[in-house]
Image 1 (tube, rainbow, N blue to C red):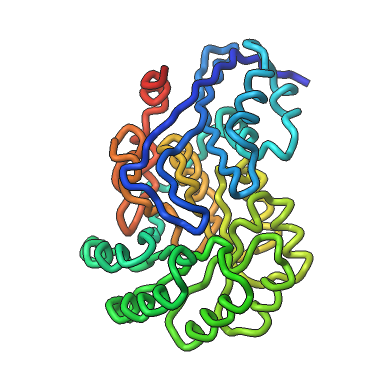
Image 2 (image 1 turned 135 degrees about the vertical axis):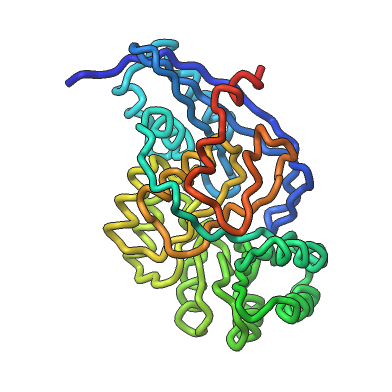
Length: 334
């Protein structure tokens, strides 16, 4: 079997977020990751992005870098394929760099969910997002006291037109009692789904909540990798799977699982740069992986077009990825 040989290189990035992101995991102010470069024997050059989120159970940045440095300057397909499954972010990047760009219908568009900040800041941001035309919103909860957030939920729903959809993301912050209070409140309200209402390792609570309440629930931190998603399907999960492709491994493996399982899938950003986001969106358009709005409405998260790409509005079209210059991103790094 023919094996392609590559010149391999890696660079690190450390990008401050324009506005720190508050979640149940804490305050997130800086995004760190790696960009890899492969140069094939033919002279073709390609790139991939490694964007770990250890709080989601991925490899750490240090572990990812060590794995990359373990690859020689000249490597081949066999060595790249041998990266263990637990290095999902590294495997995503290596597969991204070696994949052929799929052909897509440039007329296609996907609806996008706008990310609202935690707390009262969501109310301040909402009017501008509505004016831009967003129809889907995601609000981070589990950050402040439940009583305060439940009051804000009423305010938020009161300002959302009936034709919009709202997702709540607790990032696993609630205990069962708190989650039950939220699900009881949301049962009669127009909530699209509640994401990760309990800790990812508390499977009994998550399954029990899904059975006891009519609100649609979604898994996020519980299904960082496809092995976990398959396990949850085996346990009878009938809710939504929020998958961050940059964490889950090669995109073709994600597509194969999604099509075989017919999972109710949402594709979501891991706050990767425009490089990784472009690969994910290009693949999503080519394979029709989801019927729901994609979670890439993170705004100008870095505040620089190089890292953010073109501003993503309420709809993203299939040509978005073409405007991302991978070589320019690589050359901007030390």
